[in-house]
Amino acid sequence: MTQAEALTILKTGANAFLTGEPGSGKTHTINTFVEWLRACGIEPSVTAATGIAATHVGGMTLHSWSGIGVADHLSAADIDRIAGKEHVARRLHKAKVLIIDEVSMLSAATLEAADAVCREARRSALPFGGLQVIFVGDFFQLPPVSRGGKEVRFAYDSSTWRELNPLVCYLGEQHRQDDDAFLGVLSAIRTGDVGEAHYEALVARRAVRGAPPDAPKLYSHNADVDRLNAEALAELPGGVKRFRMKDSGSAQLVESLKRGCLSPDVLELKEGARVMFTKNSPQGRFVNGTLGTVVAFDAAGLPLVEVREGDTIAAEPMEWKVEENGKVRATVSQVPLRLAYAITIHKSQGMSMDAAVMDLSRAFEYGQGYVALSRVRTLAGVHLLGVNQRALEVHPEVLEKDRQFREYSNATAHAFAVMPEKEVEELQKQYVKAMGGAWMGEGKEMQSARGRAHAKSRGGRATAGVLPPRLAETLQTVRDTKSLKEAAKERGLAVSTIVSHLEELAKANILQKEDFAHLLPKRHELDEINEAFKADESGKLAPIFHALGGRHSYEIIRLARLASA
Image (tube, rainbow, N blue to C red):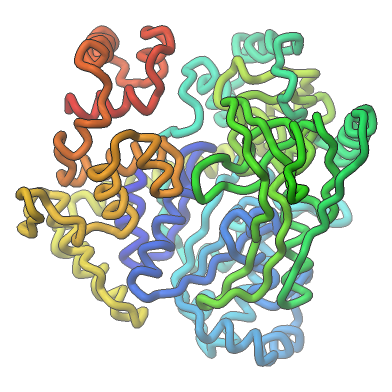
């Protein structure tokens, strides 16, 4: 299923499970859905299974949101007491749409406990008191934490999941890895079919001599990470600069933010320290996982970080926050860096890295090896210190469940594909109305996507008024700026995101070549790229990039493909 197909389904108000392999665009898809809801005047409740995941989506943990705290088993008296708390009751009563990220790390018992409180607070026997519920995650990644050695059931084993009966939206695109050999290894781990060839491909990566000096090391245990980072910082000359986290708002929520924030409460740095950015830059200058080196401290005392591309960035403090019903409940502010000599596999979830050194010899949990490996974009970026058998294993129960999820997703995609467009649009309109929102022209957008838009701007081109705000703004920015880099800077986005927006516009039959012709390379370069596409019928970008000797960026190759479509 594509991201666009999944979004169409989410916008009908159906309960859904949005899943897919790492790099398939789950976070991007759910963020786009949240943006659409807010444009319609509908404020979603965004939660996650862990504090780290919650900071990635700008929400709070499901435990905090529902008021259950650390409990996963509640008595009738507990449910009545929690649902009777004024702030919990008010929050749950106002809620309309509940999003739960990293659902693989949520136990069935915890999901059932949160569900029970919602039903009581909302005075409804329906699952979660009648809320639309969107689960997001991948059960091949880290499972729920077991307490006291007890066996933990996955969220999909809960009575709540069965009653919700979510439609499965299994994303099939890949936006992180574009290396066929590496994808073959990851797919083999995911399907439980790791063979000799796959194992040999990984063993060949055990030579770490070629690892970039700033590549982070991923470990399965916190003790290894803390020791290595402390030792590496101590070896550097000069004094330590300390940056203390600032906070405001609810003490409980602040503490939750601190636990989930990848930047430490007290960040210690020196010149020469290897660091990793822990948040995405609104201007697109860095992302969560960008590596660099502290080269100096500016007049204000802020660290200046030189990243691989050669740019030097002043790392100014940024905020992590919890929002509820459109209001900020708590914030923490810190320089968005952490020492990058080492990081735990658990905390690496959600990151994309060019390279990483991994010690998988002590992997103890299903999915640990898979999570670590899938953080990296290519097999050449993997540098293994060691690997054990468990690192190449995923939970056997999930293997069969994943086959079911794929089948359900295919059935869902087919059902919506044969549904008349007007019927889908009417479902979406009714959903927005039922949520108390204002219809923002999704029908017009769908019509436009099929070439039936009538609104024209000066010069006869389709106006951006029928588009989602993010696409409308990108389209106008691209028309007005001279280069991809300038457009990205103007929008505060990465260059690759600008190109992704153009591809979405093209799929909607709105983008015309004249809109972006000024961004294309010179005629002979364009011809060279087009010839490479003709010579390779795979339709993938990596073979084209390598065939051209890396002379053109992936973004320019994608633009050339758009121009020839």
